Image (cartoon, rainbow, N blue to C red; front, top):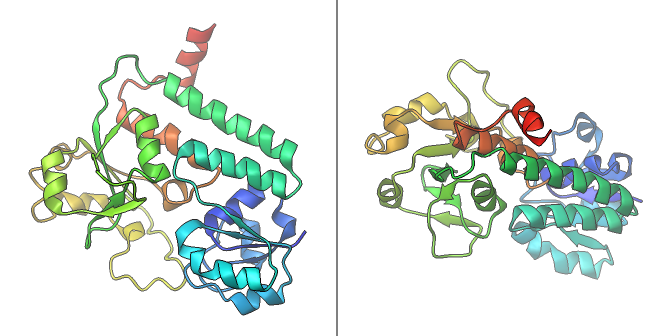
Length: 281
């Protein structure tokens, strides 16, 4: 089978399913796992080259939701089969991974692998102290303009599953532009962002990135001096946490990592594996 992936998360998922050798084309941003770097580049995540994709004679193109909707008619005209990987929740991601496995002839393997991910998520939730009060959590994406995941995103759902209380929103959109006043009024106790601590090596920029201040390059200690943010509880208590973009921004197998890491960040009383094993015994 010849597969072309149009998103880094799709590429990671295909390798997770044991389909790495079937991949003949990936985007410029597909950098994980290591084997993905050897594949033919078919343009960027946002602007794939349909002509180049067609030249690879794929049996399947794996797209990623809304950003690739404008290409679907062209793929159809060229009789190129498409699998749309678009999930709005953690469970939706797991179901899509299973379905992609079935489509690619790896149904049993996918079911087993996804079962392990579900077990990890269930265990992470079980380690949250019983009766713990959900902390107010704000997931910061871009600062200017200010964007956060909405209720139609797996990131929002992951915060809820991890025992957090995300910013209340009245829209089902996956990503929402909001005023700073909404964050100030919400007064989050914890902020989750991409970026790094001061002293850590900066993350490599994605190829083609032209942003002056990309989130992946953010130094979280600098946030404590941002204008108008000082009155927020998170900033006063220095509770800003950075997670790798690969963990938080790519809806695929790492969703289990995301729930585990969020649960540990949000709950100081989060129980260790040894404690849980003793409790279970």
